[in-house]
Amino acid sequence: MLDQKLELLARHAIFQVNINSVLGSPVRNPQDALDVARRARSLGFTSTVGVLHDNNGQLQPLSESHQKVFLEIMDMGRRSYSRFNYFQRDVAHGQNHSWRCRAGSRYLYICEDGLVHYCSQQRGYPAIPLEQYTRERLDHEYHTEKPCAPRCTIACVEQVALLDNWRDPQTRKAFEPVGRPSGLVELPSPIREEN
View 1 (cartoon, rainbow, N blue to C red):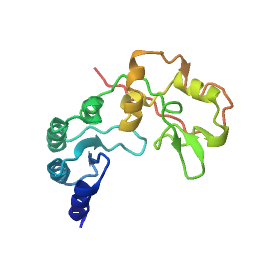
View 2 (cartoon, rainbow, N blue to C red):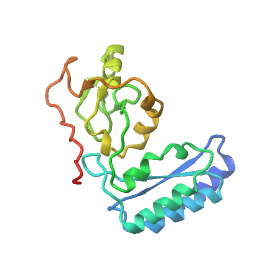
View 3 (tube, rainbow, N blue to C red):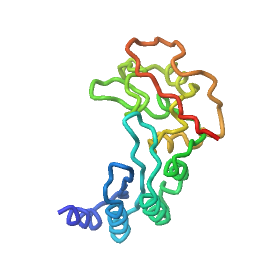
View 4 (cartoon, rainbow, N blue to C red):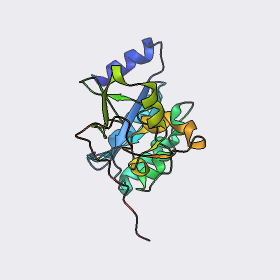
């Protein structure tokens, strides 16, 4: 059934189609992700791969079998934004990644109640209604360092911040006042690896 729909898309879509496969501990058979990626490519679609995060939006290293599939799918990448997913290699190995998260500025996650949050894994801050989300707030969050960033797995947030890794340092700490709401979700600090 799904394959028939993909074939229809391949014949009739007037837009680019990307199929994203996911890997991680909840995925029992990583070979399924590879099969999906191969089928997507055979139909002329782009194919990407993501790593599932845990319930705190943080990474869990991939097992050896998952890493093998992950690298094979990554190597299938072509002319798509998947080439900018280099940070996913750090994620797959459970390593911290150095970048500047611009969630709350370049990337807005808006929940079903119309509130703006950093992302799907950090709901609860700033939790401001979209219609009240000002240019001042965008600027504030652009310059705010997020403690959860080093072990984040959310590819779309990383991709929209890609160019910002080379400019505008983040000089504010998370939760500095600018209309700080009550009932915050605390962002977890990155796990420090023992040397």
